[in-house]
Length: 271
Image 1 (cartoon, rainbow, N blue to C red):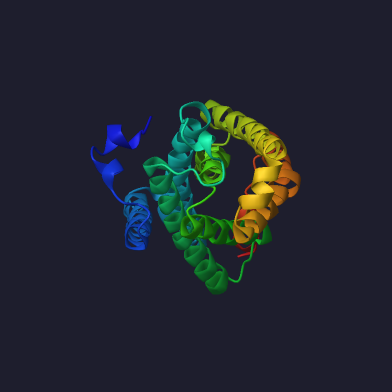
Image 2 (image 1 turned 90 degrees about the vertical axis):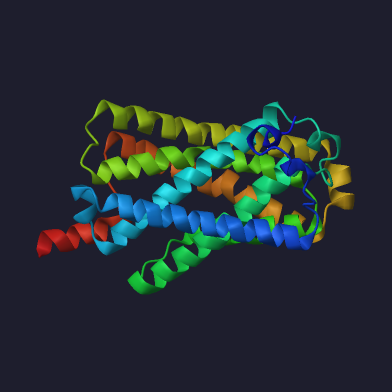
C-alpha cells in the first residue's frame, strides 16, 4: 500500500528513478525546510520567551522546530515501512517504491539544509558538537548514495524511524527554555522521549537481525559505498549515540538542565 496515493493522488506515477526528478524533489525539500525555519522565527518573535533568547539560542530553537517536523515525517514513514509496506521486503537490497523515493529525497533535502545550517552556526558561534556532526554528515552521504544507486530503500526507510525521538526532544528543549520544566506536560514528554530512545534500540537491533538473516545477499549485492555508510552509522548509533543520548535524557528528566547552552547561562550570571 502506497501512503502517497492517499496524500497526493497521481504522484506514484512520477518517474522517481530519473536523476532530474530526484534533484527536483531534493531542492523542494530544502526549500520546504528553509520555509519552516523562517516561519518558526517569525512566529517566535510574537512570544516574549523567544525574544529574550540569545541569538544562538534562537537559531537552535528554529532548528528544533525543523527537526520536529522532519521527525514526524520520519515516524510516519518508518511505521509504514515496518508495519504496512510489503514491496520493499521482497528485495531488501534493490527494492524501491514511490513512497520510499519521496521519503528519501525529502531526507537528503533535510540533511543538506541541516548540515549547512549547523556548519554555519558552528563557525559563527564557535561551538562544535562531534556526535551531531558525525551523525548528520554520514546520514547525508549515506542517503545520497542510496538515491544514486537506487538501492537499499528497505534499510533507508526503516532507519528513518530512529528519528521518532526528535519531536519529543524539540518539545523538551523549547519548554525548558520557556521555564516550564516543572509542568506535568514537560515531565510526560520527557518520559516519552526517554522511552523513544529505548525503542530506537529495538529498531537498531531489528536492522542487525535482518542483516544477520540476509547476510549473504547483502554482502554479495549491496553497493560497497552504501554498505560502508550503513554499517558505520548503524554501529555508531547502536553502541555510542543511542546509549549516550538515552543516558543524557534520563538524567535531564530527573534534573532539568540545558547542556547545549551552559556557556550562555554562565555569561548571563556573570554579567
